[in-house]
Image (cartoon, rainbow, N blue to C red):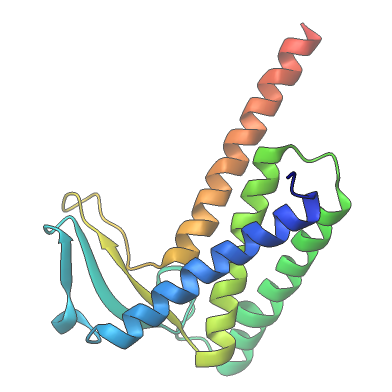
Amino acid sequence: MKLSRTAFILLLITFNIAADQISKWIVRANMTYGRQGEMDVIGDYFQLIWVENKGAFLGMGSDMNATLKLIFLLILPTLVLGYVVYYIFKTKSLDRLSLIAFCCIIGGGIANVFDRIVYGKVTDFMYIELTDVLKTGIFNIADVSVTTGMIILIFSNFLGSKKQKAEVA
């Protein structure tokens, strides 16, 4: 049975939202908040540390006033996500890789916006530290979805431009 394009889009977006929200529910239900609840998954390299982020990426904007937070962390992202949803449904010529990328970005974005609406903050819990220099901030599955989507989109566009150059030559 072949999945329709619309069903594929909705399924992929829903999967990204569900994976994020389920993981956050598990963290909130089973972990202790903060560094005292830190859990080593792969030694000191990959840890689970439950924090609540009142800002955007890596806590940026957490000290903004309420009006600016409303505009930059809720209204603007919602408008952008709405446009991207409109764009992927309208643009039937998108290749499969780009479509997957946009669905990951939308799913992750919706999941974090949902947290901001329902909880007033975003639950983050994953931390990677390979060396003193190679380390991340604390992040969540939605962040992984958005980042993965962006990487796929860049890769897809790079492949597309290579393919176009080959066709022209």
